[in-house]
Length: 262
Image 1 (cartoon, rainbow, N blue to C red):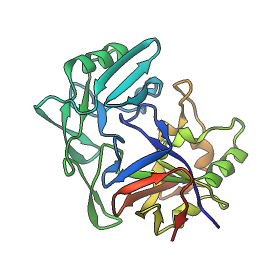
Image 2 (tube, rainbow, N blue to C red; image 1 turned 180 degrees about the vertical axis):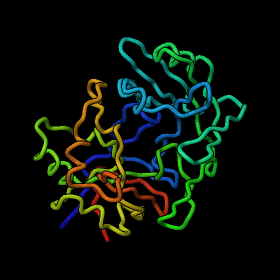
Image 3 (cartoon, helix red, strand yellow; image 1 turned 90 degrees about the horizontal axis):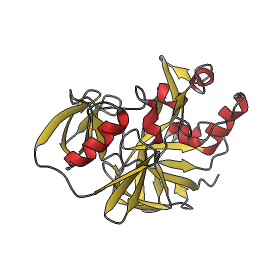
């Protein structure tokens, strides 16, 4: 079987819409500019689609040295490199995360559109958030993603699920970083180490899924599928599994069309 990269995605701001790309620079913390930013509330708690499904309706674009966000009829941008100096100590789940606010105007723009006070913050340095993996028995430097730097999904995993659903869904529901062509559903769970281009990756574990996959990214409306159907055949230890959490062992660039080697 020849496994080929079909799609690549980055998600600059945690829980906002993603950006399809043709190539991406793989770094220890995840793809360059992937989930280096997130929104936090007044208690410095991170904000996601789990509570605010309309976050999926904020669409980022990377334009040279800026990130532009569009929401309904409003557009706002900020420089990728800009931030304030004062450190903020937040968490992503159980991981302490040192971040900084981007700027006051950007926080105000998001606060107005979400209807409550929030800040857009950025993680600056490798090591500002560490994730302890009990499964791997090691500590990883990660971005602001839920746990691991990358999510890999095989095409047949989605095709198999869609055969069971009344209303078909797209891969965007699962927010992958790397989508590959496969022939067997969920065979990506069984990968150990593999290489794409000049980048070596290691499988950490199957990815446990939450209610976020029920949010239709086209509408921002939360329903009951596909989690309801997935739970009938992809449950293990009370986790519904879909896709594989992976991390890279060296830096480099990968592209759509690249083959996997083992």
